[in-house]
Image (tube, rainbow, N blue to C red):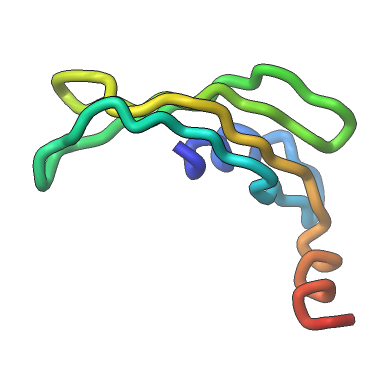
Length: 87
């Protein structure tokens, strides 16, 4: 579900921008069998500047297996990498 949120926002990023996770609140609703095909979706719920909140859900071929909210923020990849290296 978090990956679905990432992919849903990526087309709107510019230059070296990406989104990074800021929060995740997921409810596990059901189990899926080994090898089950899982489909996840993310829908933009709100945004404030560079911060986004998305509603997310996942299901297998039979039932919904999870849902919740994911928070993400837009960052410059270059600045993000430099910050991670202590620069």
